[in-house]
Length: 138
Image 1 (cartoon, helix red, strand yellow):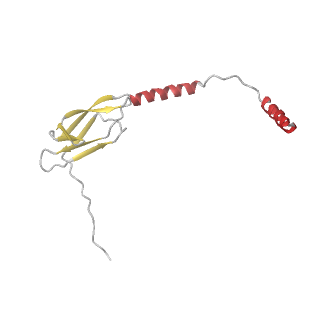
Image 2 (cartoon, rainbow, N blue to C red; image 1 turned 45 degrees about the horizontal axis):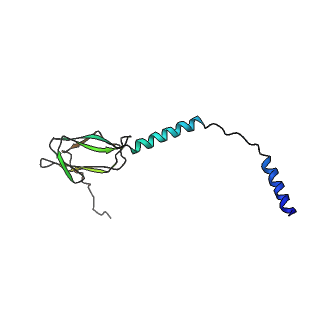
Image 3 (tube, one colour; image 1 turned 90 degrees about the vertical axis):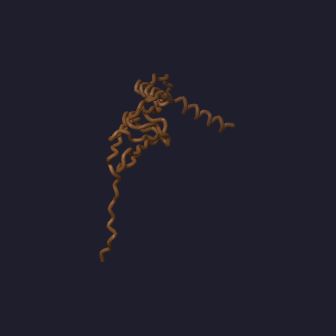
């Protein structure tokens, strides 16, 4: 029992040697950072619709978004964004040529990419084919 009271006295002395400080006011920088974080969180949850203009040269390319035909360029489509203007869904835009000799072109946009204001397809660009030299030189 005496051993227990000795430990109790030592513990009391150790804890009583520390001074109690009154609670301090929060750091103003911390408050500003928390308010900014709360605002960012709110903007990430907001859903807004944004118009995206789709153009092609020459005009008239057939536009398909995520497998659904939406019309011929030039056209405007609506995409869902958060308050920061980042996409809330991924989508794929494909432009099929109207004239022979032109190439099909595709643009991919991932979730959380910045939503574009305009997408342009130059249908006269041709596919690049790499040249391979398969000759073996001894």
